[in-house]
Amino acid sequence: MLINMNIISLFAGCGGLDLGFRLAGFNPVWANEYDKSIWDTYNFNHPDTILDRRDIRNINSDQIPNCIGIIGGPPCQSWSEAGAKRGIDDSRGQLFWEYIRIVRDKQPLFFLAENVSGILAPRNKDAFNYILSQFEQIGYRVSFKLLNAKHFGIPQDRKRVIVVGYRENLGCGFEFPEPGDEVLTLKDAIFDLESIAPIPIKGKVDSYHPSLPNHECADLGFSSIYMSRNRVRSWSEPSFTIQASGRHAPLHPQASKMILVAKDKRIFDPSSPQPYRRLSVRECAKIQTFPDQFIFKYKQIADGYKMVGNAVPVNLARVLASKIFQDIVIGHKASGMVEPKYDNQSWMQKTAILT
Image (tube, rainbow, N blue to C red):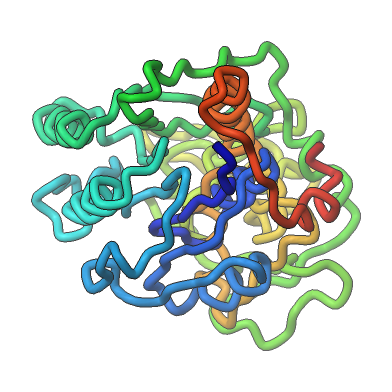
């Protein structure tokens, strides 16, 4: 059976997950994202994908193209340790049902959903188990695992829950790839920018970096919460988690680690060889393994950090997508179930840095 490698992306954000799947051989043909501050970035970097800008609750499944797979990350703030922790009782947490609804109606061969580690917290156990049971009831064999991105070619400590479902009639379940031994560092990720100073920005971006797109950094104060723990990793370590907030961005490794002076209180080392500053949007993007050709469009510095921090790291997406490709496309091609039909490979050529 000849099939397209078409997939759709829900809660797409700027499309880190989409890019990783494209690099693995899939073709994102349609995406949904409701946040208007992201639209320009998505359209610029995914010109061949139709972007539906409506509230997902107002989209009928028959308005969505048929596909081999569905990917996406339903909003995670309600499950997050840093968020309100209301889980499924929060309106954002309930958007998981919209994801399930569309998977049920479209019946793709597979789906992949990403969420924060807080979804596994004891307070969310019943809700998460119920979500898994709903996927099973609509005909999917479901696997999930907490992964740290640093074990999969991402220079960052980043723990996220990945849920993958294979349609029951495929006769197999998803087995997560084994973590690698090599851990990439900040030096691997951003040392090439070490001599290029970013433009400090407090809010609105009136002046963009003249030579390096998105090399602007948040020039904001440091709260007592921020100063409660060390925010500096050295060049020889992976980054702290890249968060969806400039105010909470890690500090650049040019500075010394912060000094503990009391319980939950640190100060900047006065003898640090270089000043303390937050990582720029571009540096965060490189740590998230976005290629340099991927340009983020924003007028407020906060929107740049938000897009980068909410994204699935491109290399992690590609690793997972490659395993799915191996299982579903190559495995079932051998059995005569499917035969892949490939579409444009423009990002394959433009992102040789990732291959």
